[in-house]
Length: 113
Image (spheres, one colour):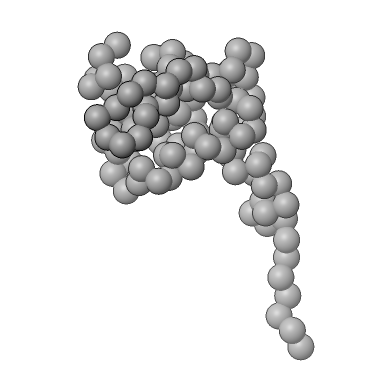
């Protein structure tokens, strides 16, 4: 697939979109995913996508496959899904797997008397 093309993916949750993107194209770099996801969800930022890639790599569902020189000052890093992790539940809410203690609703705060 040409790196300027965007695969047809009908998912709007970021983690699931990244999974479907990687399943469709095999390997991708975060900026390519960002450019395509922005067409579906215009409010998304590159920082958000980059953070998702960092989290997904940290929890072990994606891995870096190669690095390529880029015209910018940063090298372009490509990622793919780790074999066997395609259906891992972390794709739905990766932040909860990295930071389980901060899961929404896990802590209850009470007003002081």
